[in-house]
Length: 473
Image 1 (tube, rainbow, N blue to C red):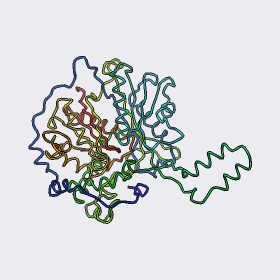
Image 2: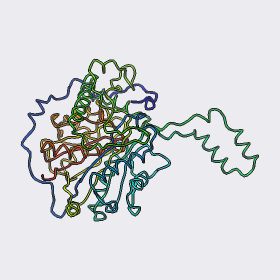
Image 3: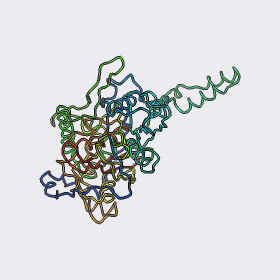
Image 4: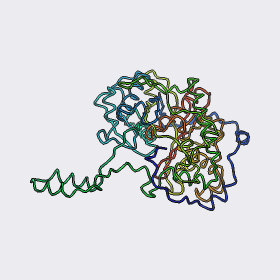
């Protein structure tokens, strides 16, 4: 993670009860997981009287390391590119969309409603309303499910949802004292008042304020939280590095085989055409082992190699009622089915959103883990993913913290993030949710599966999960 994320680190405290129960346990092997898989049901999740809502298409700009090719752009430039890519892929008339929703986290002050600015720039009708949502790393998840809500309520038939994040140029403010002085200067009516205010400025007032990449409620960076969580669940440095290497290796394979078909080419003004994610970098365990801890020093296990990196990128999906999609001649990719949002303790359980959300969404859909053919979980940190998998496989955790009788179980790794994940593809905070959903839809089609599940954690101790069903071939 970039140095701007590394606030001073407090000592690493670990829940002793978690450490005792999880410290000696390792991630279940693929063979063990395979033995749990049962013959899945082929029932559809369609319900009488409930409108079918479909994902018609999804695209994204290449996800790039911040400070690289996109460095001179602005967030709405990336969002506009994603919207234009969606228009090109679908051929939908620019006035046939009823609403546009975009997610973002670190907002550019000049385009606070980036959804509207991007939509106008992409050529959508100025009669189409647009708004921007923020829910940390699940912002575009919220944009997508808000689209589902508008269609289910009969307010819309076609909604574009997406997300964007631009970490190459984040807003940096003057200090609060300097801001107050500047505002007072703006109101001063006489030269004497202005000179007095100018004379009150001290060197310390000129210190800038960087965006706070830490939990407001705990003052703890997410990387520090990930390190404590990994320690609590006994996730070793080796396990984290192995998972990160897996993510990069699978992403490189998917990229080379042309499976990342949601990526559109983008001509960056004044620069080359970008057509690939540039953060996919398979390494070796030996090279990764050389890196020092990024947050909890000197004994932490979270490093730059097993963490997602600061990323610039945008995504967009076209969500429609099935009736409207078919009437317009589209062949949808998937049905968007049940979804849930969860919230829990933002200190010790900040990144456990998938653990809490997965059993809830499966119960809503009437499915079990063995029914799911495709899993796409957001990879904020390798330690976060591994801790979630261990929590999901623990009856003790389910009973003690979730009020459940038994564990939900772990995803079979032969179904899990097979085209890479946020650790390798990148994680533009506001855009990842739509990337997850589109990847599930594309994998279901490629692999012939029926049900997919996305899950993600988010700042504030929140999380999201959604069941996606393949559209009949």
